[in-house]
Amino acid sequence: MSTVQTPKTKGQGRYILVAVWLAFTVSLSIWWYLFSQRQISRLLVMDSSATAELAKDQRMLMWEGVVLIGSLLCGGGALTWLVYRDAKHAKQLRDFFLTFSHELKTPLANIRLAGDGLLEDTGGTALEDQVRQLISQTDKLHAQVENSLSLLQMDRLQLAREAVSLREIVRMLKIEFPYLELDLESERDCVVEGDIQAVTTVLRNLLRNAMVHGAANKVWISPEVLPSGSVSITVRDDGEGLRGSKERLGQPFQRLYPGSGSGLGLFISRRLIEHMGGRFFILEPETGFSLRFSLPGYLV
Image (cartoon, rainbow, N blue to C red; front, side, top):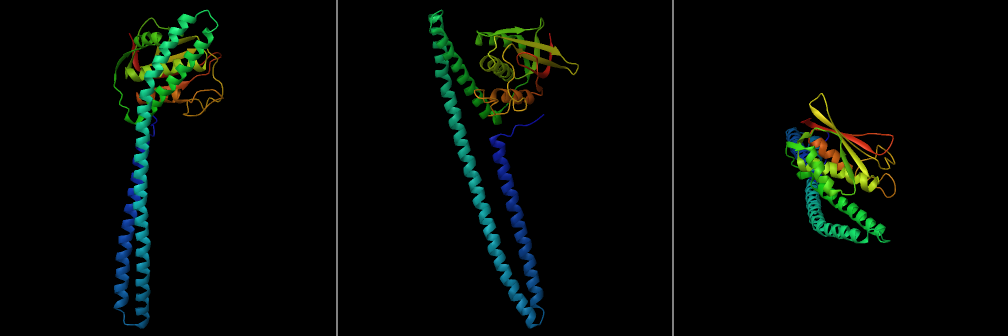
């Protein structure tokens, strides 16, 4: 299972490297000082003008070395301070964007509700297409805000392990996506062992991608039991399908083509599935877009 390198773990890595570098420099300095003192002592006990001159040169080299090592230690201290300042600044930026994203969600939800009301009032008129465009763009912005929040909170990720009903999640998502037809292709309920919010986020991202970027009208969700004691869930749509490089799909901030998404949705979905002990695959169907993920679970 792959790991996510978050800003927090990166900052800790910098501190560890600085500490190792300082420890190595100090240890080398102590060894070098003791060795120099021993050499000077040996030279001084030798009765010769040549050895006296060598002892003088040795002292000069020792003090030059002291200056060099002092400079290294000062540089290490400055580097430690710079790393601390950078980590503090990154935390301030992270907290700002977390607050900003949370504050942005409420007005976006209000705009979405107003758009739904306008759509009912303008149905069948020349303004209907413009209102639908307003709703579509609002959904895109809301998805970006949600994904940005999820990405910022990855280092604080604490997932529960509970029995999650796929049928219940699909029922809630049908209300959230009224313009997208969802078909759960199973007479039996699929129960996965994971975090309900994480599983909901994964499916929500996939549905948003299908509707916003794939212009899909229908999505099929097909669970299947695996011999390993897990369930495989395939999500496919009738949209435009994959455009661009499959290798770049799901890479954060990598656009497959002009106007495509930032890739955060699939990236976050993959990481959430992996954190819950599952696997995530991009498929290549003849039509539409399709992917599959597996999680511990069963059919009831």
